[in-house]
Length: 209
Ligand SMILES: Cc1cc2nc3c(=O)[nH]c(=O)nc-3n(C[C@H](O)[C@H](O)[C@H](O)COP(=O)(O)O)c2cc1C
Image 1 (cartoon, rainbow, N blue to C red):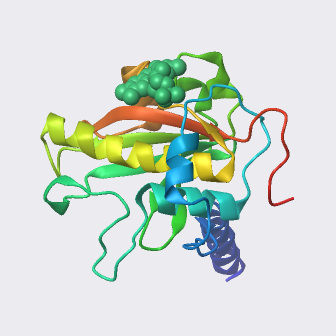
Image 2 (cartoon, rainbow, N blue to C red):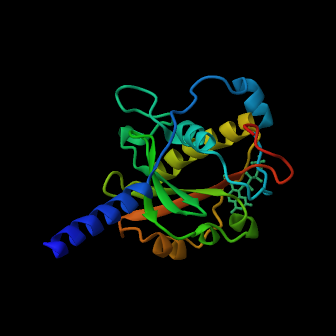
């Protein structure tokens, strides 16, 4: 009897820990921001980052802008060929690797380790608090041209959001994709397309502080 109660308590603790590792994001702000023409004028690549983490609100807004759901039908803020929605956004943080669940507006933890150093060959990937990893899945669409263009739309949404929010970002093609694929424990049908670190400029505090 004692053993059974012990096992149940252990199971509960393990389940609670597993739940605690996922992050339920606050609802994204879908209004405000910089006027579009000003954001286009401000969009640029910036390769320096503060190590300060983004707030959960900033993360939620960033991910929604990138590839969130913007219609009841489940369609997204970026187009995708034949609406296959084959690009997944993985989010590398110091606390681990997460998968963006656009429907639930949540981050599902995939790994408990920090793999940001594998997301690019340039040293700033270790400093930026967030690195987005764009991953295609052949099971949803196996057409390289389309998976590349679909990733580009998402990346540009991130660029414009960053321009609007005063965040720095750079899209990266110079990535050891095999090493990153292995570190992320992806399936053979999944492919890393590009990565994109995001963070505050090194000399600035968060707008939300
Ligand atoms: C597909 C793609 C891959 C890129 N890869 C890298 C990269 O690995 N490292 C890097 O520092 N910049 C990379 N960039 C950023 C470009 O160097 C940058 O966009 C270009 O210099 C123009 O600057 P701008 O974005 O400020 O207009 C990449 C851009 C694209 C579109």
